[in-house]
Amino acid sequence: AAIILLAAKTFQLVVLEGKAFKDLADRNFSRISPIRADRGIIYDRSLKKLVSNLPSFDLVLDKIDLPKDQNQRAQEIEKIAGIIREESLALKEKIEDSKEEKMLIAENLSHEDIVLLETEIRNLPGFQIEKNTVRDYFEGPSFAQVIGYTGRINAKEYQNLKPENYFVSDYLGKQGLEKSYEEILRGKPGVFEIQKDAVGKKVKEGIKTEAVSGQSLVLWLDSDLQEKLQEELAR
Image (cartoon, rainbow, N blue to C red; front, side, top):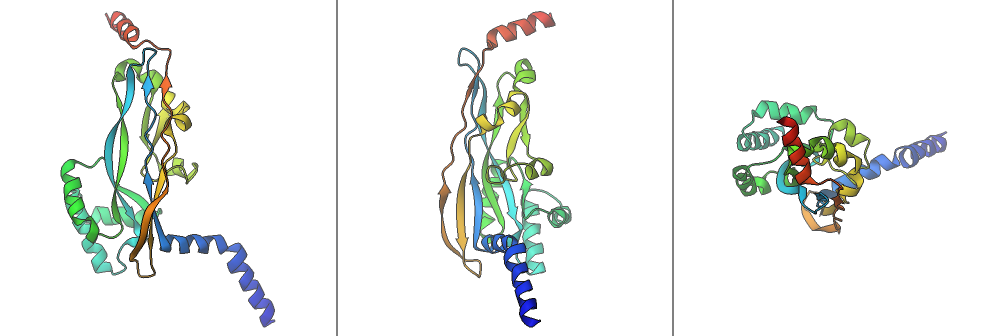
């Protein structure tokens, strides 16, 4: 009976729950950060840029690295809240209510916030600054209905996408060509890995995979003609 019980427990841990335990062990050993791929540019027929990329920076939290001591955790959250000018209690509730281990804390950080965070980030385990990109639409009113737009990924979209291609702080195409050509424009992100020992000390870091830039689109549209038509129709 003891042997049967032991075999059943072994089967449960190795076969039924093995992947979950392996993922947990990997998470304790390594931390993954995205290397964003440059999203493809969109041109008109004369190779005039209609859409390009602008650099952006986000503050992201990996909750597994937060201090276990509640007082230290509260102090860390309060310090972050002061930098990004948010109520510490509201930020604490936001972190505790999130079901995701890795979550977006603040997006499109200002230069002032980045400078302040960079001076403190080493003393704030779990928090990190991630480089991102946002789209710059040169002729927004004239081409919005065709090009569409990108937006921050939401929880439902994130669950339905391949986790190796998207991160919790990513943007993706929501409408128009940005959505239709998402896989082509997006490219493939790279991965930067930090390995830690049992006490959380960094032992190794480096690029695991390189990012592959997205492809660009050349449309048949003539941007000058499009603008002229819009002016005439408005008149």
